[in-house]
Length: 252
Ligand SMILES: *Cc1c(COP(=O)(O)O)cnc(C)c1O
Image (cartoon, rainbow, N blue to C red; front, side, top):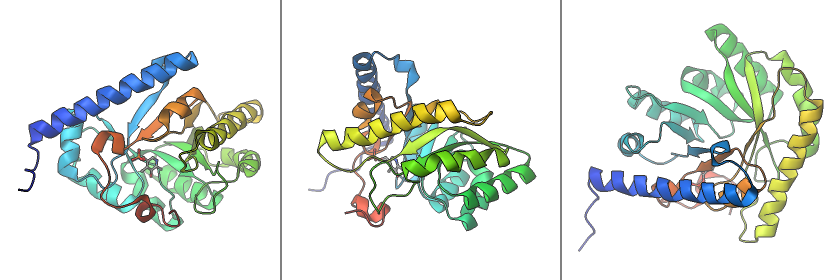
């Protein structure tokens, strides 16, 4: 016999339970690191989760949603436009897709080129709005990962005051995918050190208080090393149907 599809009420309860478990783990990791639990923001990552399920997630308390593909994010934001969702784009963006995100996104966490910065600023200026932006850093050195090499970030951020609609908030990274905690932690430590350096040299108006790092498998480690935003998908919504190599070309 096939398992029955869970009812909306069962899905609601499941998501609420998962959120409560994650919030408790965040709080525990904060205590362990001597930090305030309120210093960490949980960004639910909703890629591949269908819009109807996101209505249930919204009812369960997810009012922010992170998506890594512009097309998917845009479609969902339209279908769910009756809900007050803050959309965060957390995936690499091609310059020709920038125009779409200014219509629905509150935040862009994956800035890694001046071409995208220039285009995004141009679009935001003409829309008369700003956007919170994080610079993506490749902290693992893997060729498959997007983001600037850590040593290039200093020069990069010196150019950003030219784009005044971008409200620079901090850095974002994906750590190495590994079961070896030491290797994962090394990525997070590299980010914390980079953050400290940038804080000293940052041009006026740019802030590096935010560190977006840590996902379902490694958010507790990330919090120990200073994460202020954790991006969690599968631990809330369940395993994605396809392996990560499908969503991150080059991985796996
Ligand atoms: C999918 C994704 C996540 C969340 O990964 P999970 O394993 O589902 O927690 C975080 N950050 C980015 C950039 C992603 O694409």
